[in-house]
Image (tube, rainbow, N blue to C red; front, side):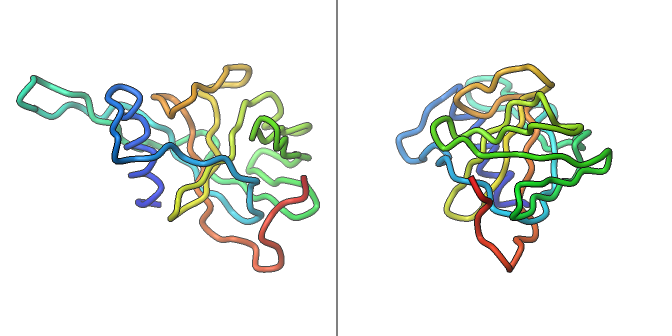
Length: 150
């Protein structure tokens, strides 16, 4: 989870100060498996030569944990439902169940795959991660399948 958190933290800070040495997360079809979630929040500040700069800290997320299976079903602590992946927009659409209505993008880096949820149902996602986004990192891929059905 640390690798994805550092990628996400870099992504948040890049929204304020882009760096030519880093790349934005790539869109990717979500892999089936178990995802563990956290929320991006401010965790204080650090002093820099230019003054205080806010730090981004992973905090507990209300989404907590979810699993995707290879028959386009998901399971969450508060219920289950169906999802699909829209390759045109790179969005995961939760069609039924407790996560219906969230805007979600499936992203990956060289090290990790994750789902990035908007801060609340009905909210849109920005191009880069921002405070309030829920990040669900793939913890245990399902060995029977590497990708979900579109």
